Image (cartoon, rainbow, N blue to C red; front, side):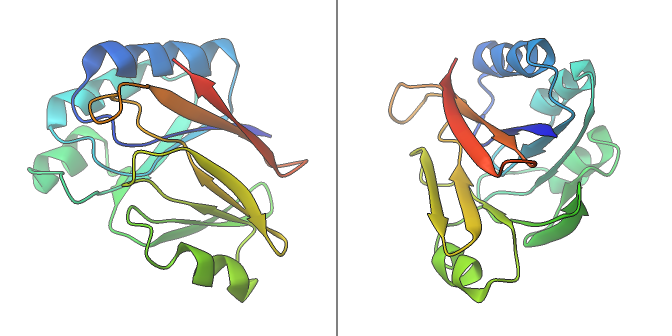
Length: 159
């Protein structure tokens, strides 16, 4: 199962549209957003996904009530823990406990954002993915990630 992962869109509608188009073209079966949409109008673009999505609130998400409403309930408080394709997944925004979560062995996939820096690595049997910043405001490089839940491999894609 191929999933799309993005984070830190920060209201960059041009880059967010590119991410939506990329995920649809790659025929991802699920999308996960690791926080910092920023404003509710950004979530409107997610209606164009050809699959379901879930995400979490980040530290820069302002109007959480409207974000929750506009997402149809698909944005959650962190940590967001769920099972997808028989894989235990935890989604965080901040990076502080990512290594400890991976070392615990409780999760197959740990997803985070916040740092705006792409990161793909394994700790024991856990895949850790930070897709970088889709919004490209901090470092000027818009990136997302694709992860295969069958092979437990991921890659960073430039938008």
